[in-house]
Image (cartoon, rainbow, N blue to C red; front, side, top):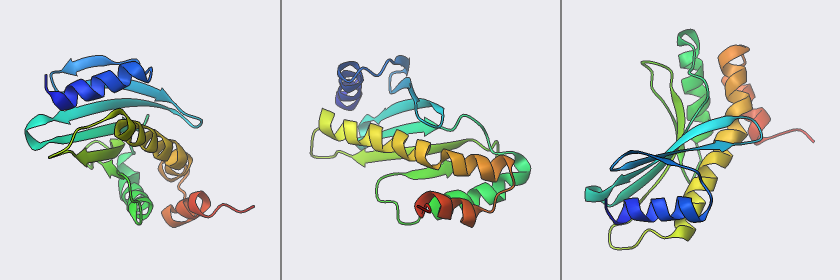
Length: 152
């Protein structure tokens, strides 16, 4: 194990994120949000001095809706400061990633807390629109507008 792995494991224990070890670089956890439940994993890239946290969408984009989902996540990502959505075109897996390069500094609990919670908040915020695009044939631009510019 390394310093990044040790820091993420200590944070998860201290902040009550139940977790399991996947391998010597990755811890798996989960999060129950307002709109869904997410499988999450924290990954240490010790040699690169990098940390990444991912939340996976509970569904994969159907093959015939992947282009629309790609548009949705591209529109969602535009202007995002912390993190981004990703989709694997081969199987439709959708996830949100927050990450940081910690070369020359220490990864601490305050930074990890921001990365973890910003991540699951964004996945949960955008999930309803994503589901509409995947399964109700919603227009990606309209789905994003509903999320980012809700009517009063």
